[in-house]
Image 1 (tube, rainbow, N blue to C red):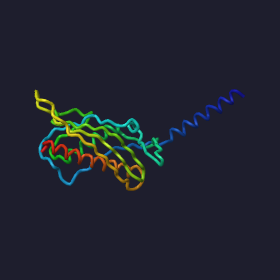
Image 2: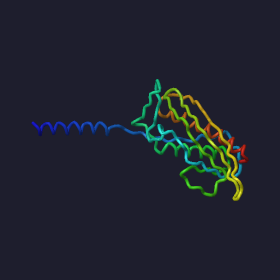
Image 3: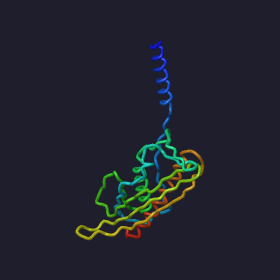
Image 4: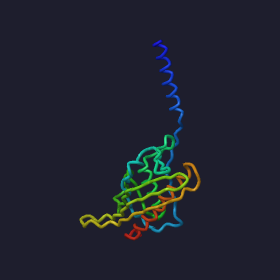
Length: 199
């Protein structure tokens, strides 16, 4: 009887393992969206520093907010790269499209040359409500690099808060909303860069 119980026990474990391994994971990346026309026509060098993210969403799984504030961490929908790096990468591309000949790199990419400006981003919230909307709030700073031996230059600081409707259902719809939010954030950063003399 003991041996039969052991066999039955292992059979149940194997069946559970088979069920768990049958879950199909899907991987996604964010994408850039260009403006109607660039606003800068010279080779400005810009570095986007490492992006700060809330611990809740700083993970490989996508995180969704449901009714009454319920949080769901998806078992199947995942980021193909760290979200903080994806945000930096897309903003680098978005800013390149908006600033004409600017050369923009994002952490952890190496700088090709010494940057003339640094952009820092502190994401305060990044909430996805499927079939409803995306809510984000980002503190940012644009800091010109002072010439060697000169005093540090003050930074231009701001906060961008966005509510972007999610049109449709499914992960593709939430990705479109997130791409749109990053494009609007890039618009604000591009204006700040131009105002600081990035023309």
